Amino acid sequence: QVQLVESGGGLVQAGGSLRLSCAASGRTFRQYVMGWFRQAPGKEREFVAAINWSGGSTYVADSVKGRFTISRDNAENTVYLQMNSLKSEDTAVYYCAAGLGVYTQYGYWGQGTQVTVSS
Image (tube, rainbow, N blue to C red; front, side):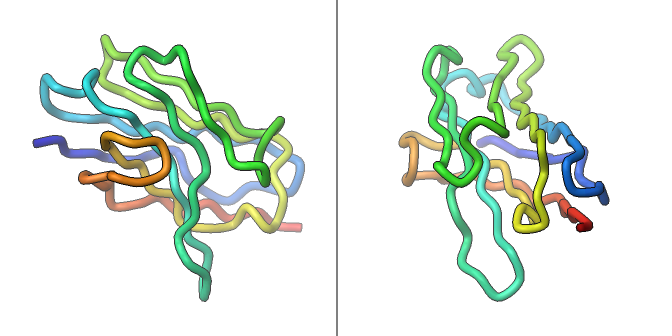
């Protein structure tokens, strides 16, 4: 079992930055691929970024490539999403997830944190 708690969301102006954190409980954290997804009002949930168990491989959606960076600290059981050059279209609820695949097979989800980018 893995429990995930996101933090760091908020209101930011376009062009600004935010860093989301996802704290995981359980000693098996390092076994999982960790991902970030987002869901905007009226839209389906979409993949944002993922990182493998060691942090050596990362995957980022084209829509955020060059602006968002995912990282993890296995000693702290935490995964991060650094978001720079934010745009209004980045406004969404951001979810942290733990799983076995990069784009699918996520079995554990956090409750989400709201990110609002004002233009």
